[in-house]
Amino acid sequence: MSRDQNEVRFGTAVGWARVAFSKNILAFIALAVVVMILQFGQQFAADPFTESFSRCIEVGGAGETLNSAAMATCFESEMGSLLLVILLAVVFVVASFLATAGVIRGALYVTLGRKIGFADTFTGPHFGAFTLTVLLIMVTFVAGLFLFIVPAVFAVLLFQYAPFFALDRGLTPFQALKSSSRLVRLNWPLAILVLLFSGAAYLISGLFWGIPTLLFLPLAALVTGYAYRTLQGELVDPAL
Image (tube, rainbow, N blue to C red; front, side):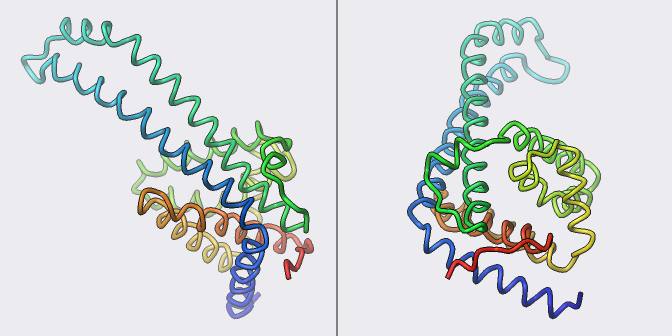
């Protein structure tokens, strides 16, 4: 497949995503609002934990003046609030996974020409497979960061379709990663363009209090969903 063909297909994917988003704008904005709120919730839960942890470190001192007894006493006194914050953070993380799965499931539904409803995207199957797959990708990404960043980027490139395989077909995490890697290896140019688009979309989504999430998160999911379908030879609803 030539470079020109990949560029045309990428342009087609973006154009299709724009039309599909406009036709399902209320549903996608509702889904993205939930993601945005949960992202704020994760930050809200993380701040008290960081403050408590830092306070106990300061109480214990540093270097030769380290007071382990004082630090242990501080952590003991803060244990109740720390556990509550950790529990709250876990709830927000799981809910955020559920909301993100809703956006991706919505994109998958639209590629098939299905109307999406707010509730339908959250109640579909394979959420467990999706969550485990995303967690495995996160672990791989973090491990790659310790190997001078490049392996982390390479892992994200190879595994970018894995959440779609898990959510669409219910594949196990390792099956989803393997399927995504195979799809990317056969279509490097398009896969790189899709990743660059998604990366830019997620970067922009983090600006201005996360408000761009309402537009760019659904668009990223739709572009990736279009590529996921077409690269496997599956028909995509024209969305026109």
